[in-house]
Amino acid sequence: MSQPTGDLVGRTVTHRRYVPYSHAHYAGNLVDGAYSLAAFGDVATEMCIRTDGDEGLFASYSDVQFKAPVRAGDVIEIEARLVRAGTRSREMEFEVRVVGRGAPARSESAADVLDPPVVATTARGVVVVPPPAPVG
Image (cartoon, rainbow, N blue to C red; front, side, top):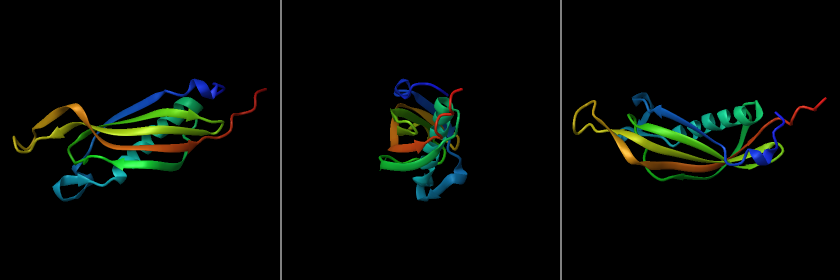
């Protein structure tokens, strides 16, 4: 793609998914923090496909913060926002928000929409993409 890198800053990619009970790792149906990091990788991959026509490779995470639990049965929203675009690097801010949560005290299948959502995990990350193809 021959898009100027400055035009990429500010773009977002958002995924939503249900957290299956098979991912519960700790008491209280807690999911490990790696679940959020894997979700960040998924939105970063889509961002790179959209901006560069390539999946890219994750180079680093920084400032990972686990702010609230993610539990099996949650519905989460994962967002990547492009904050810096270099020649071959893309820096993104990530956020996992819990937008729905099971309410087992009411019944086995009860759940609530959380308004406002609960911010569970945040991070910054850098991905690298191949150099642009030569023109002509």
